[in-house]
Image (tube, rainbow, N blue to C red; front, side, top):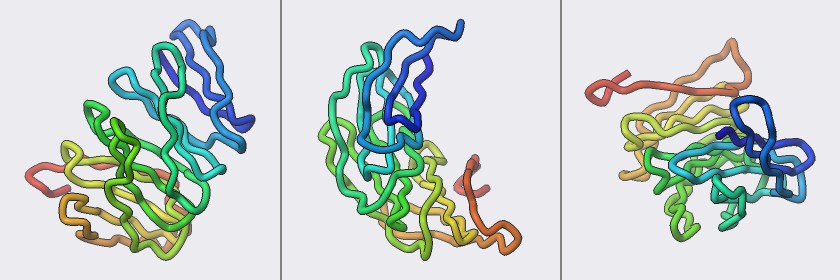
Length: 168
């Protein structure tokens, strides 16, 4: 299955042949992002919330509330026990999917955080912001391990990484 999030606030589940098999209103404003893992799906929105879904039935199971501005990206850790989110409120948050609790708010960006991803078997998080900063976080230690800055790219819209022995 594939999950999409749309400007009209809907989430859709698709088959590989291009047929939408389910659609549901997910948010009150634009749905900016979607992720899926282990039978769960998540959508993030300009309404400042994240919706968790049973992806097989496209039924909303929980709302994650805590961001003060819109959510630009969500990403599941392998196994879908945790979710990371990036927001215009300049934070990266790590959530427990089973309880909808915010486990950690990582604060340190000076501009809107546009992307965030788990890396290194989900022991670390990469984030990118509207000011060109890329940060590597250690959620277990609740700290930023390093900051990279791309002065030629004013906005970092996507990040990805693979760590080998704790290094890129």
